[in-house]
Image 1 (cartoon, rainbow, N blue to C red):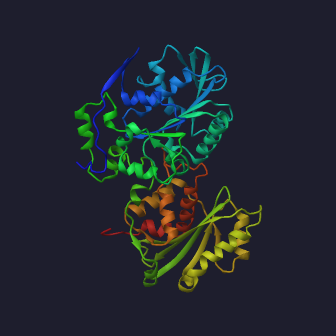
Image 2 (cartoon, rainbow, N blue to C red):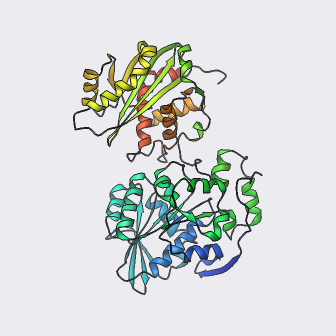
Image 3 (cartoon, rainbow, N blue to C red):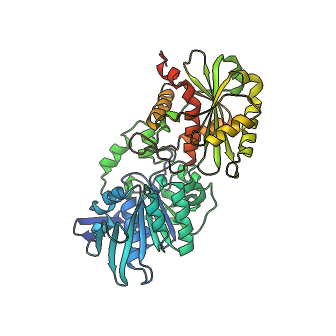
Length: 468
């Protein structure tokens, strides 16, 4: 069992039992210290089943219950209201059921789904919000909310997190955010949560690999960090903990995500596992490959960002080479794409001498026909510019997963390919057969790659592959 990168510490003893109609809830000194800590933003990360959501909910309930009369609106958010109902309303160990004499759940009515909490200073409303309902969370964030509870914060859209912190600072509000480990370069970490530092009493319980992540940002005394492990759950036996440590092979995706709770290993991601180790080729060796065609995909971002991806397929179509990608961040006037076209030409230029004769087609996001025409008429390079056919998303996902699984998607060592890989790792499943969009920048990269693969998708999927 490899525990070399996780700090050793004694298992905390249970020192308090909270009576509820559902039985007893056991609290350790660490739980009580978190409940009593009044740092404004509490960041609670760790392993599944480590009690972080239970104690975070209890701590938030105490703040709500003790709040002054004028503070009467609060919010709790997760992936969806269904998720919140499972985690809070149906969970016997949640604050809602521990303190059910003061809490009433109303699934509808004015304000929508909410928990009403009777306190010494009046009734407090705790609104339930799902990340999947943009119009609802915008309405709730528009209210004067005195405190937030965010479950699974690592899967919250960047837009939600940005708006949340605007309201937190504007309203002088507090936050309890719980999460399993997400991806290291997510905005929620790099812009906010990495500012947190552990309580001095529990700094030794934070694994070295997690402290290294936090130390990438300057500390902010408004943020407190807590890391919860299996041993922090008083209801988990030593035998259960031992079995969990041995449940997955050391170094596997499951071991890193479920046992160590390391960032970078996240469930629900469409390509992350397949991109752990990708075949790579040095850019300068591409001239040894006989290409039957090179294709460029262009996605026009929903904001002000556009992405180009260049791929090449050899004559036998046994694999596809991802040559480069480029991200345009340029504000432009409506109906004027001059700057994007200029940057497109600059993207093509270093490849033109070697590969210009092989560039068969440029496929462009069909949602913007005006750009297709402007690029066709104004680019220096006389290429075939076509609107994408926009295959259905499940078909596009399956193609990329198939190529990655078969080690048939080869990336060059360019900076653009590294950025493409990092963005593909972030693409999340919608729980069905598609991906979550929500204007996420990684979707712009994924779509641009899809458009580049469109003209050759049939050849790639019908090619018989042996010994891959």
